[in-house]
Length: 220
Image: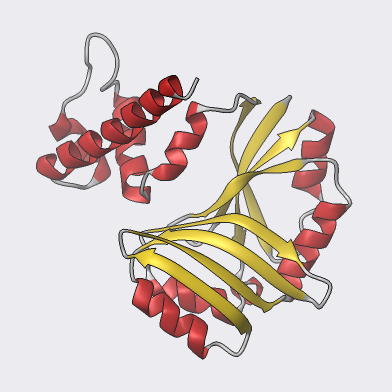
């Protein structure tokens, strides 16, 4: 069993008005845990986010595309249910999904540069369909691929985008190698952050990873 993770970038015409307003809100993190195209041509979506929860509520309440919604939590972490009118791009993507043999490994994550990070699970042949049958108006970039192993890879989805950036820089520079080949100052230079901020991000990353591993051990 294989997986491929891609980032899809819709052009300006491919972004519906509702999503454009949410993107402009600048939430710290967005991820879609479940999305279904319903028989009445609306989309039901269960999502997670961090950031301006009151701004999101205002956008959802004012949008004519939204028929119903519920948001619970606070700016440090919230979940939302939204039912909204299907746009052409979403309708095409979800209808193509019904006719394909691959599975989507949730959640689907929004990237800070306006893309959607999606991981597909299946065979090599299924991935060929994924990469060759995308609708017009979408640019696809392959981020990574390999043998699918569920587990710790999903911990990354619990990190903020900035934490992931710092973690990528730390791994690339050899911060976690033995002996250690990089300092906080060197990571800060690559990430464009202060040394103190890098240290704070790495501590939060490590706390998230270690707590997840501990929970996994105690659940067995």
